[in-house]
Image 1: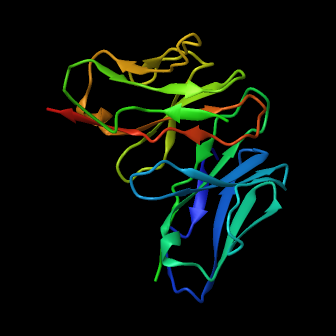
Image 2 (image 1 turned 30 degrees about the horizontal axis):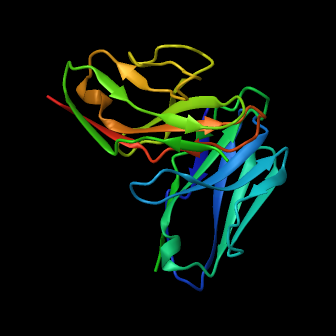
Length: 114
Length: 110
């Protein structure tokens, strides 16, 4: 399996809801990433997990809470989001090896916050 | 801090014409450079990386450390090349995030 999968594909939520985005890869990659992509903009990094430990948090608001239950799974828990959080949320993974940082991207979850 | 600059937001060329998408970077160390492509309604996918020195779908890119550039070139554009192209940089430490340029939308006109 050489793909990164993400569920759900689309998500609509209210500002008081709690929801989770899921990401899975079975390529044996040890680094996993969450990016946020607004329309017609490049992806912006949110979090990096390396060997299941959070290694980078790009000053993301606490209403976004990442979790890496094991080396194949990455979750993003959402709570009390704002309409401006509406975006495409991309998960990516990479080997995590020096000089091999090719990242494989999932199709994304398109999130709409009402 | 690392930075990637793609000066063109939109590039329109005729089918069969040569294409060059510009990318310049700033980073004091040894970078890894990538070109990612995003076709309409498809996921972001790797097109090229400088260390592999391959030609993919007719595209090539050479890292020029003197000019800190990694321009993407294709001698004859095809309609199916129309997409959003992102140049991206990573440090060589293995689990660092990609720093993306703002992207260039390539439109190939029949």
